[in-house]
Image (cartoon, rainbow, N blue to C red):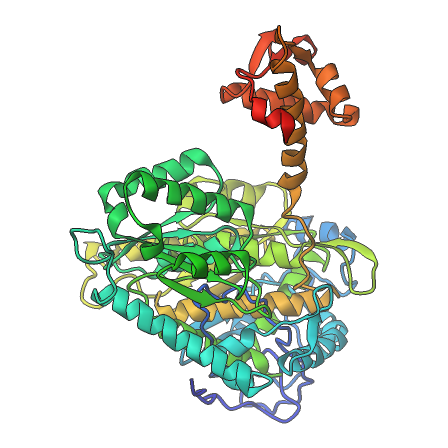
Length: 632
């Protein structure tokens, strides 16, 4: 994927890192190493394709350095104190923080000076309603320089995840030419081509299910969790056409009722369903459970699962080996140097266009001038004091982008939620993300955002085009349905700011594969930069996914104890204390109670005496004796 060159000239050699460039004055700006951070792979798809690079940005530039310029001033007396005194008291906040600018003319100047535009992508970033000051930007410059250097080393293949001895190379997927060697480059390019060819053959009917009267695949069932589900769900919701050639469903949890619902919804179309199983490690319990449940449904329907199954996983993982031995329809690799954050293979979506959009944004985010991801990271640090003191509320004003807030929630919180920094200090870092959609938010929690506790900053996601050309009409003279949505967004932004609530606005021309790819790449990189600013490893993921293991291991011991008592003649109902004692787990008696209550609710244990509302009163046994288990 050839990179498209940047179309907007930078101002001067000592460039402005994040400022607009339409002023006629000369630019004497210190550079703020921009986006340097290595965007978290959060879009590395199940498909594994790469985003190449290209960019065209424009910033306005004043004579003052971007590191020294600020329009923020003391807040007027009639403005709520919440944005000044309270914020200044929060831990880690720079002493240079001032009140928010409220003068309309000054705000307009600040808006035009700081507005970022990527012409080719049709993307704008407005940070004028965040009150960072010139002093703050100066203070942050050394951290950005460090982040910029770190990014350079990462792109050369430096080990970025020392716990696992792995490189972090999702940006190579966007531009294979950045790969540290020709082998990786060829592997990336071949994988992308094989994925696209497979998708084309499925949609075109060349690859078809063996037992379907439809003669082609009509449904996709994607099984995955976390990044292996949120990314595909977001992309499918945002980009799938109104009548896609294949409709897509997701199993993204180990909830039996949820799994049953998805399978029931498929009905007879199970025979024409392409099942995509996504798990980097190949051993994620929730994904394995979903797979086993679906395979059971296939057996009961007399279908051959292998002829309709696709595995997307790391080579030689348990899932990969299972798919190879059983002869699944296809297998695609997830590389060990890319985190398994997202994956997507939705029919009807132009994958290469999405990669091209991300590639363009990547190019913009690699430069040390006019860098949108660096600007986002700067705003996050300012707004949250660099310690996560405020939440980020994400409000996309477009129904198709509803899941973007959930996607960002996982991207940001899993990347930045860390107990220790790179120096081993306990810091308990993080940035809480939540959101709904506009203008639904008007009827949900905007009231609290405007007048309640001031513990947040807002990110508005705006889509400029309401409908395809030629499809709009006026509900009343001069006003369309989309005008109301626009008015809600702008009105909310203004109302929040007038009460001292800061906000960022990201605008795209329309929702397309290219703009979605750009949004993902923008936030991936911003997360990496912010992590560098606060000195944490965004790619380190402690073993938090094993929580269920200890509980299930205890449950097996409880079952063994209850089975032994149930096989006696007469049956020996046991109290909780007796079960805990025989399990040698008296300290876990509360968990044992919860295990027994769950088993009883599912007819796998019998409460002989008492009731679960009074735990100490119960005596329990199994409904039947499993003799074989006595000798295991």
